[in-house]
Image (cartoon, rainbow, N blue to C red; front, side, top):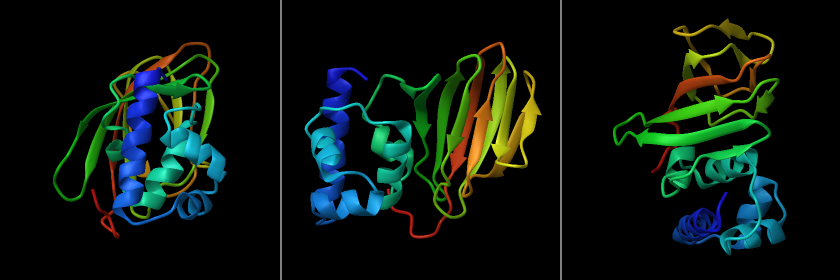
Length: 176
């Protein structure tokens, strides 16, 4: 992530934390990350993983898209890139993403907030995705929807996979 994007994410994260009246220690403890890492992130330093950003969004009780909305570059790590395309304003909240997985990628995703569902439509390549132990293989043009409030994965083989992903958040305690 470039320096401008890191600064933007850090400022937005800090504003959401302060809006709730939380200390750095409170949010770091709840998200399971080191206070020093959260401090660096809020200062626009470091290189947060997608999992770290997800954990912070869950603890702040905001959709992932709300946390990353100010960032215009794709977020990525370990062969996966994600970019927010649009964020719904209705209830339930629906976020739309473009996603690319490099060849030979295996990405394990943590459970999202209760009631969250993901819908994936494969644009190109080959992708195995879904809840761990109950994945589905997709070829171009095929789609799947699954409960994302449990651990799930994305796996590619020889070719990269490009897909559209929508995340529909459960209504439990959701704020934007």
